[in-house]
Image 1 (tube, rainbow, N blue to C red):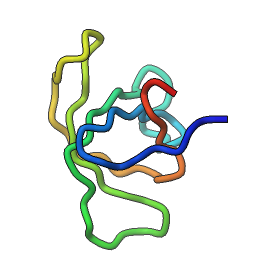
Image 2: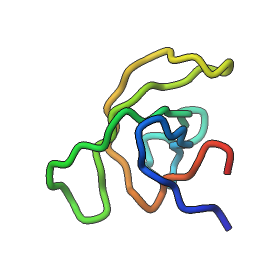
Image 3: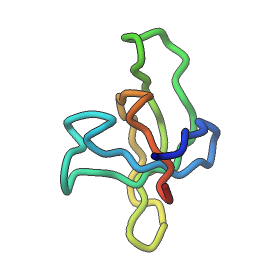
Image 4: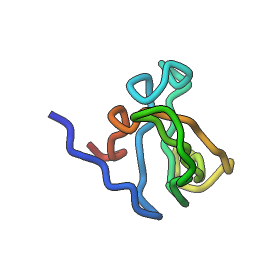
Length: 77
């Protein structure tokens, strides 16, 4: 069973197909959270802003992603 993710700035997340089909397979991301957009959206979905991390843990791209809250997991979980 995976642990519940905390959506705090600096949290490192695994974003894969459980979060959104657009991140399936090799399109999955390791993502360092900057903030959660507070605008209202579909129930259970969130806009997140943060950095995609490379294999060495460095930030390689700033992105905003639309994901299912339930599908988010800590990168180490």
